[in-house]
Image: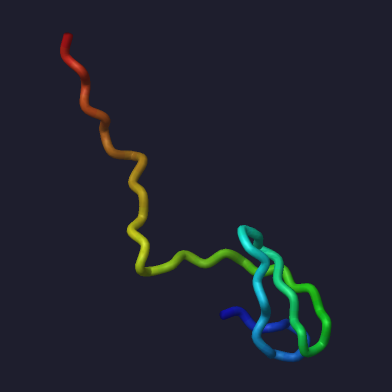
Length: 53
């Protein structure tokens, strides 16, 4: 969970957004997205198979 830039408390994240709110100091915080290590990375550079007609 991200922390507030002002007081260091946990920030409540808005759903599907990179914005959060600190209830302790009433500060709105922009959170940088971080990759989750549990999610596999998508490899879009793989060569696509050709369809033979």
